[in-house]
Image 1 (tube, one colour):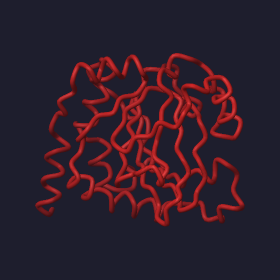
Image 2 (spheres, rainbow, N blue to C red):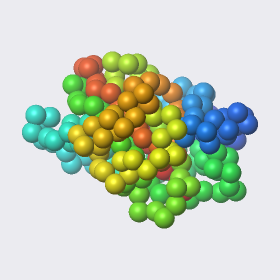
Image 3 (cartoon, rainbow, N blue to C red):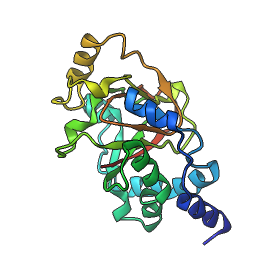
Image 4 (cartoon, rainbow, N blue to C red):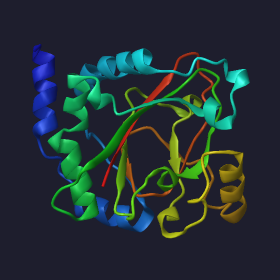
Length: 227
C-alpha cells in the first residue's frame, strides 16, 4: 500500500465533525452541503478504481442518439463494492457511515447500494425525479451521498435539489423521465430552478436533477444510499 493510500484509509476511518446546523438544515431542507468530507488526496486515491470498474462493468454502448431521455442522462453501474476491494474501502468507510447516522439521528446505518453515475460528453439532462421510486424500502429514513470525483462546474451538469421536496409526495410514483421532469416543474416552478453545487451532498428522498454536460469529458458522480 502506497503512502498516499495509507493517508486515504486513515481519513476514511476518522469521524467527520458534523455541526448541529448541518443536521438541522438536513431535516429542514432535505439536503445539506458538507465541505471537506474527503480531501483531494483521498478522492484522487479512489477515483481510478471507481472509474476502471465503471469502464469494465458498463453495458450501455448504444450511441446517445438511439437512447431515451433516461438513457441519455448518464452511464450507471451499481454495487461496485462487490467487484473491487479498494472501492469497498470507500463505500464502507466509517467516516461516510457516521455522517449518514448523524444526519438521520440513529446509532448506525446499513448500506442499500452504491452507484457510480458518469455523465457522457454532450449527454442529456437528468430529469427532476425522486430516487425513492427505485428503492424497495418501507421507510423514508434514508440518506444518499453525492460524492463527485472531480471538480464539477456548471458546464459539466452538476447536481441540484428542490429545497423542501422531501416533504411532498409528488413524483415518487414516476421513473426518471420526461414526465417526471414536466410534472415537477409544473407543480413547483419556484423550487425547481437549477441551483447547482459541486461538492459532497447528503439528501433524504428529495427531488433531484442534473444538468446537461457540455464538456468534452465525462462527469464522474459516485453515489450511495444508506438506510
